[in-house]
Image (cartoon, rainbow, N blue to C red; front, side, top):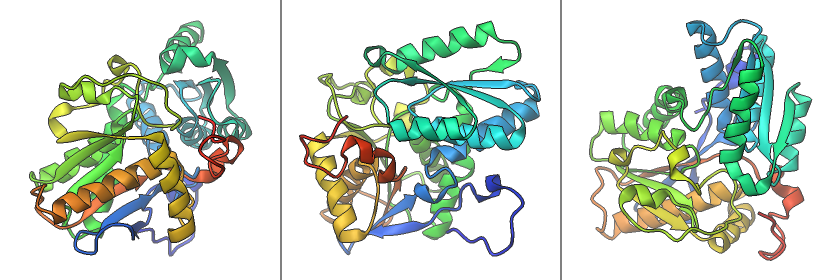
Length: 326
C-alpha cells in the first residue's frame, strides 16, 4: 500500500506503492481487489515502466546521458516516460496515432516532450514504424518499444507483482488484467506464479481484439472504443506469453461503458474503460471461483485499474454509449 511518511527528493520516488482497493460488486466469498494506478505521479500504470526503462537503459549505456527516447504510444506511456526523462536529463519524442486522447497529448507536451501524430488508420503499427524511422535519423536516440522490450515486463515483475502479493499476504487466487502491450499482466503473472504456481491468470481484451488468437482461438477482428488494451496485430505484441495465461476474456465496449459509470456512481472510482473491462472480467472470475468452476489456491482476485477517467472526458466517457468516442 502507498505509504510516504517522509519528505521525498524527486517525483520519481512516488512511482509505485499504489493502493489496493476492494471492488464491491464482487461476491463477498471471493473479493476482488484493484491496484489504483492513478495514484502514480503521472496518473497511470505506465509511470512504472517510464521510470524503470529509462533508468535501466541509462545504467546499461544503451541510452547515452542526454540522449533521446523515441516511443510509439497512445499516451500514458509517453507521460510516464516524459516524467522520467525530464528528471533524468533525457529528451523525449512520442509518436501517437491521431485518434488517441487529446488530454494525454497535452500532458506529454507540458512535460517537455515533442509529439508527432500518425494516421489513425495505420494504428500502433504505423506509429512503431515512424518511431524507428525517426531514431535512425537522430544520433544517440533509442526506441524503448514497450510492445517488445522485456524491461516492460520486468518493471511489473519487480514492483507491481510484489506489491500485490505483499498487500494480500500471499493469498492471491487469481490475477486479471487488461492486455495492451501485455507487460503489466506478464510481469505480475510471472511473479505470483513463482510464489504460487496454481494462481489463475486471465488476460482481458475488448471484443474485436485479437489476443485470443495466442490461445488458439479464432477471434473476429473489429473496431472497439476502449483505449490502452487490445490489439489488431498480435505480431507486434511480443511480450505476451501464452504459457503464463489460463484464458483470454473478451469484454464488449457496452459492458465496459456500463461498468465505467457504475464504478463512479456506486464505488467512487473515477477510472477509464480499460479499468472497467478489467473489473467486469475480474468479478466474473471471482464468481466462477465461488461456484467451483475455477480451481484457485485462494479466494481472492487481484486486478489493475490502469488510469483515471479524467483523461477521457473530452471523448464523452460518461455520456451515453452512443456519444462515447473511441
